[in-house]
Length: 378
Image (cartoon, rainbow, N blue to C red; front, side):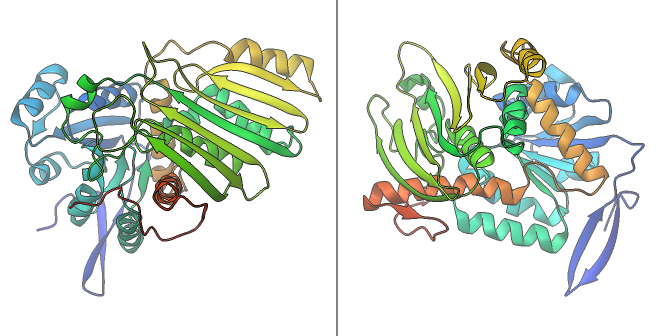
């Protein structure tokens, strides 16, 4: 029996019931969390700031995790996703499960015809992502991949400068991830660092930075990569480097490690062009460190430096901005900043890097992975 008829209208096409989610502009968007792990806390904080959204429910197959979440936040929590959906009527399902389960979870829940928000990575294989995108298109479901760093204020200003052409000819873009993850971190969750369910530093910790390069610099033409596992007792990589060539002719460098000691050091992006250089550093690409242009506008550039060279004090602020974009996309039926096709791009580049590692050759995009171990269950 179809319920929540106030939220959906249905049409039958080739024996497939397709739900078109109608969002009343005067009502809240209801999100439900699939997974009650640590990242769920950030979602509660981020969505809790928004006037036109709320979390109506959560679920986790671990009864203790579900119970703890409900006791902490007073939000109904379940151990069965179907019951949660039937009883709480969410517009959007937030997929917060372990990395290697994202794709399977989305496909399993597709029958409920809700929109999706998914934590990175979108899924671990391109073939599964393509199946998800095809099914979403068939059902007219929107899917959003969380790339919250696109909403960091210094990054927004950097993107604006690029779009205005202030850099002139683009020369080089670099991202650095120098973080510390010891063996205790990996052993806390047995799936971490495995090829089948997580991948290494390139897939997990550096995925936001890889997305940032693509978003700022445009499409990648080719990549060569090397990885190593130096300090972590895991299957996959704890250190990786890559050289990129973008289709606009610029070069790129990715440097990523979880073997930084004794602590997290930086998560940064830099863009160098014919007429300017910008570096955004801090731990999460949220601190403007260099802002230099030949066509200097004293008032505008001084204001940018004054306002964006300090790390934001408010936690999960960029997540709130991400969810604002999701809500606007749903209410006005417009394209979100990080929809499914955008979310696929970084996964494709990660696969290309791992393919390069395995073949010891330059890999040209787009491509079909042949040697990459990521997401392969033996």
